[in-house]
Image 1: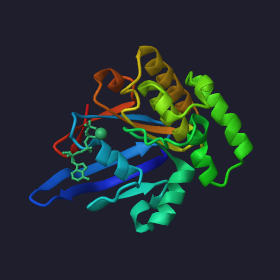
Image 2: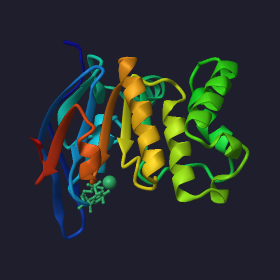
Image 3: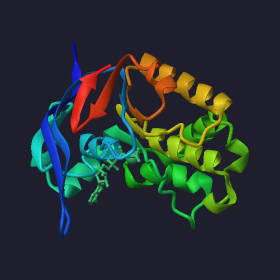
Image 4: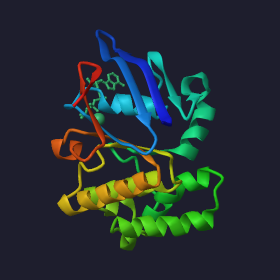
Length: 224
Ligand SMILES: Nc1ncnc2c1ncn2[C@@H]1O[C@H](COP(=O)(O)OP(=O)(O)OP(=O)(O)O)[C@@H](O)[C@H]1O
Ligand SMILES: [Mg+2]
């Protein structure tokens, strides 16, 4: 059994002026390569906070995360950003597309930052955009797209470097039934290529599609 991701006793506390918020209070998680993990929880339960820590975008207050046997937070930010670029794809809850770049340029951004072959990346981008049904929007700016189209651009960008681990924060939040199904099919295909997916959602329908589902409640994960 190859465990691609191990989180040990993750705690995250936010210190505001008059308030201390203990969002994560001891998260332990082991994720086997090639699995589709779903994390369910209500708004404000800490799903995005957890996903950002699992993907090394944010540091925990306490605890460790091992990705591919790398003890992530012993590394400096520059090394972490290289690891992310190479191995981890993020679909952000609020997309974070760059407004002055076209759809295609947004999707290709992680490939430009990395050391891959741009010509191959472009072919890959065309294929992914086509699978997601937004190939014909490739020259548009994000402002010229619907919410669901923007969400699909964010998904394409997360997949461009063929990540070992895909972290998806509410990736179906703006998608209709048909596009949700399309995305789930893509995820199943990724799984068949031994890619690992961790998806965060507050939809119980999506929960049923995962191999393993957890409920994030009062800062801890519970098997569902
Ligand atoms: N930078 C921050 N500073 C202070 N508090 C924060 C910060 N980020 C998040 N929080 C708080 O931490 C809690 C968890 O936030 P988080 O965004 O992880 O929730 P979530 O489960 O993703 O919610 P949603 O489903 O609405 O996206 C919330 O109470 C939020 O107000
Ligand atoms: Mg969130």
